[in-house]
Length: 388
Ligand code: GLY
Image 1 (cartoon, rainbow, N blue to C red):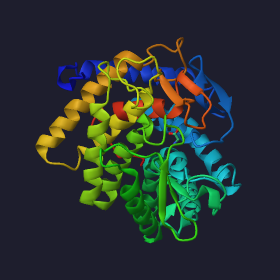
Image 2 (cartoon, helix red, strand yellow):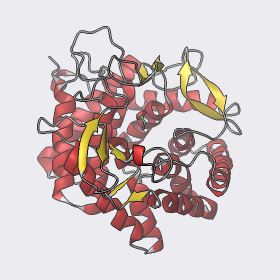
Image 3 (cartoon, protein in one colour):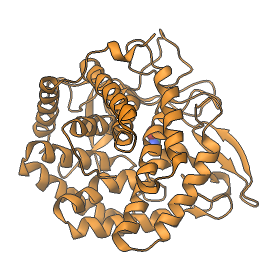
């Protein structure tokens, strides 16, 4: 059984080493991935080039911003700003934006650009993305439709991942003074919290509603092992998403969801800390891990530590740093010849008897794992104005 207090912590020396290694990998591959983006996940630990499509490219631009913050190297800033232009073109031309992942795409790229450099192009692109996201709000059921053509009756569902898209809406209200973004974010949040969290503190990945009446119908998995299981990354989105929701709403319910989802996640980690891709799998198992889920949860713990009383804060920070050290020791890339990513042993999607996935990015790097690992390192360096 995992005993977190017995793990070594992320001390200052190891933190500096981890940051240097990560920034060096990103610098090494910067020219290759400035005008081209990285594909969502690696093959044999190296990323193919990609156009600015899918829900994942914002993480690479976010890594460039984090690398810029951590190193002061203008090469990262300049590359990130070029990519911000690509994001502005993407939303203007509506390239692969018929889905809810506007926050994943536009917070770490364009909101970050605005916060770090005052980029007006970043600001207006992020606001356009927020407008696109609120257009997916469904009155019947009171949620943001995740996937498919807006209003498609067969896709009348929310997914837990969307909690990470809500900060874009809260930021849009803060930036414009227009309450419409926040109002929709709060409605979605309240629906999501009500239905995705189960009594045992595990979570559903997706939840369907009746398109005619809005009645809540059923929880169904898309990427988990089965409908009733806890997909590790879904649980992680719940943890970090609830912490971010508290940041913007200060509602005790969000903090309660954070604590409950976290307690399930931590109590289902295997002895070597790196979660299997679904918590159906116990320790030991031959099933693959999803390192990205742990990186996401560490960020959520460090975010929530800003809002709680001292005892809980100290505990969250202490646990987060020990988990981050384990992630570093077991999954981090230390040398650019090994990989052009930062975090090994992620799983994008794993086929099971009960889900509709094909195996994709199994035991590979993925862009969000790399990003959240670097965000966690940045958070450990001290006060951070987050991109979310
Ligand atoms: N948001 C999609 C995923 O986590 O795979």
